[in-house]
Image 1 (tube, rainbow, N blue to C red):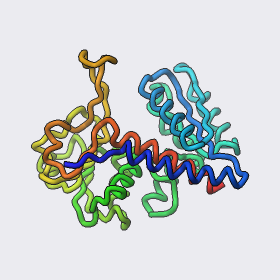
Image 2 (cartoon, helix red, strand yellow):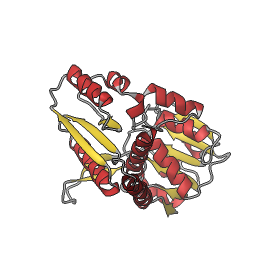
Image 3 (cartoon, rainbow, N blue to C red):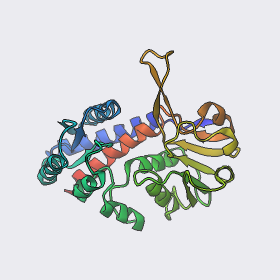
Image 4 (cartoon, rainbow, N blue to C red):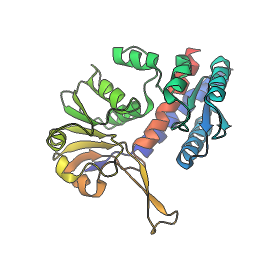
Length: 290
């Protein structure tokens, strides 16, 4: 078993981006600028945005965090998005999800200018991705593809099972894996909690990508010997043995699955850092397209 080290890979990507930013500045241009809108006080979201700011500092980007109260109305948020769409000094921005329940996430995503949608969520960018046209790729799926690329994992002709059908991970992941690219060219099955014969289906997978949102859902009896397993899930569960009172758990029962795999990600230092690296790549691309 080899651990897919997203932390190490993302560090290399940041170093590559930092060199490009240094060249941009040496040519007299301003640095790329990423903004993040944070609504409410969700602890995980605040931590994630803080990591993004740290990443921007490391590569030489400018960054802005716009904080809005939990009670902010949907209209307040849409007005802020309109401001960011028209701000020529900001190359790309994200609205950190999840949003408070009184705000329609779909309406918010549709309001973002596709040219600044560095999360890759807007229908125009998703459509371009489906057609193989230049676009901002969804950050988490693209981060996983980058892991495959940098570890030279063979995907051509492999059977890939994607557990989860969300618009953020599962669906775009299935599209990227099936495209005529390298990595890619896999035969893809997308499954979910209502799929019948799920255990047998997972056992047939050469590559198993798990984004189903259920703690330790994938167990050892669902994984084929020598499979590549990517765990996208991350949930905080109480743990009195930890100083902070919790531990992060993925959608895969890592301890019991790891010995059956050729490659596997760990919930900490796996997919998360690669998602953040993809966001930086998209922001640099947005700056270059100006």
